[in-house]
Length: 168
Image (spheres, rainbow, N blue to C red):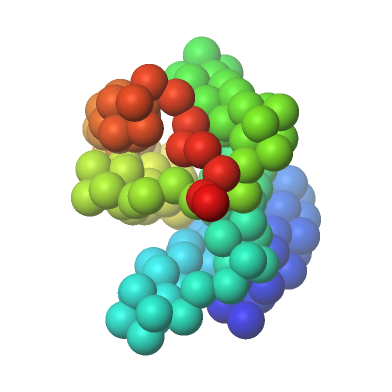
């Protein structure tokens, strides 16, 4: 239910941020932050109670990527982020989506602490960028981006040089 709520929140969030004056919107930031927090709560509850569904395995990463990618695109549109800074995140998400689709793999990525930290830093930075025109949240975004690259390397190495194969 939390994943479905996050997917539903993408539309009003996008509308709030798109209509924001210069990309600064308390409403968009709060909705983004709440949706982001449900991601962490959802993951915690699923691991704590060993409650995993096919819908969750597919929709959870999709909801996260949509939320982050739409925030990035709209912040670029508002000239709050340079396209060159957002491009690595957008390309990574597009590449992963294409590879998963091409290999017909059910999205089952083993999350590591570096990946979780990267997502937390990027989500926090994006929410802060929606609250203030100050430049300091960009530093947190850069840190999250660096962690994201490290996580990608760990995922790549952990899957023996590629995406995980379909479970037997």
